[in-house]
Amino acid sequence: MTNQFAMNGLSDQKPHFVLVPLMAQGHMIPMIDLALLLAKRGVLVSLITTPFNASRIQTTINHAKECCLPIQFVELPFPGAELGLPDGCENLDVVPTMDLMVNFFQAIALLQKPLELYLKEHVSYPNCIISDFCHPWTNKVASNLQVPRLIFFSICCFTLLCDHNISKYKVYDDITDENEPFIVPGLTEKIKVTKAQAPGFFSAPGWEEFAKELREAEMAADGIVVNSFDGLEALHIESYQNAMGKKVWTVGPLFFYHKDASYTATRGDKATIDANRCLGWLDSMKPKSVVYVSFGSLTHVKPTQLMEIGLGLEASNQPFVWVIKNIEKSQAVDEWLSEGFEERVSARGLLIKGWAPQVMILSHPAVGGFITHCGWNSTIEGITTGIPMVTWPQFGDQFLNERLVVDVLNSGVPIGVKEPGMFGDDNRVPFVGRDDVEKAVSMLMDEGKEGQARKERAKILGKKAVEAMKEGGSSHANMTHMIEYFSINVEKSMAQVAL
Ligand code: UDP
Image (cartoon, rainbow, N blue to C red):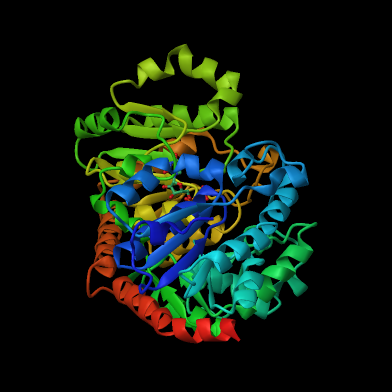
């Protein structure tokens, strides 16, 4: 394989970080942002990806080239066929069935040897590897090459700490009913959840071995990188760092890279709406009047639920941008929408069917509220843009993220869902009626005392997020420290490998 850094004449004297994101939008997108930020600060970055995923982010690849950012996007062939995955099945959002999920993770682990080979042949030896927490196999790569490995989490420290404490205090040893609320131990706040809402990562049957590998790789890691910032959760960051006994670098909000970028509309994938049309529509709306509704990249919203959301938004009389995924799979929704819904709301409703330019929309001054599934990226994006949220968690870490927004930050209104669905199983997702949607929107946009106070708190958090990323801010300083720390250690790593 060729060394593109050498070909581009970029100095080998710069520190070299290897980034290995999980091939899932909520994991890849923030890590690409991390790559862009590191490269902007002079670090050589190799971002490991696969052909299908690289094609989705072609605009980012072109952008990095145009800006002469020292990033190389390393495309390793994806060994999916060896595990019976269909052609092009290289991202979590295109894995066709739940049964194939295990195969998907097994295929990813087969990248260990090709990655090692690539890094050994590379003349610019890495100073460190930053890899997603879902890639325990990268621990072997790091130890075989004798380079430090940092774990990357696109999860906040509050949620990581709750998960850690629930396990440390063996809370589930005494719980028989998974819907029985309990208080998360070891926190200063009273945070009430259920086992169903906070089951732990990869706790479903069949994932025991993988979960064990995750824990071992976590113990062995040399540090942790988190997409969060001090002004949001300083105490939780400190407690989590103490609990883990290793350095935690909070360097977010990572999407801040896109604040000035003209190609923001294509972050993560090509948007299915023309960016100028979308911006033109937002420009025509009053400041802070629009509600943005999106459930991220993985949540499947059932047709009946989609219809209730639509009717609730219509009844709210509030302008909205509504992102609907997988519509092509649901004739029922397509028919219902074409039965007049779109015409009825055309003066104040914009539907995006497919991938939306989320950060571009959230950053627009017309947007005043966000109905979110509480994926951590969406949550921190909403927080940074300084708007209140309606929290509508579905699975995974999302219920704990909701608790942070509603109970700790006081900047969100819960839609009221108590039981989680299960990733990939639409039938377990609790149903929310149109009246609840309408009520949540009116609370979100409320101009009364309570609503104003919530908006004010959200605005303050947004300002803190911006401050964190500026020169002199906490996340900016943490990134400087992380770069310096691993730049100094390079000679040691190389000497060890030479032995
Ligand atoms: N996203 C986007 N357009 C979409 C859907 C999602 O740009 O139509 C981005 C969103 O801004 C976020 C990421 O994809 O950065 C989704 O991550 P999150 O953690 O919010 O949710 P997940 O998709 O992992 O459930």
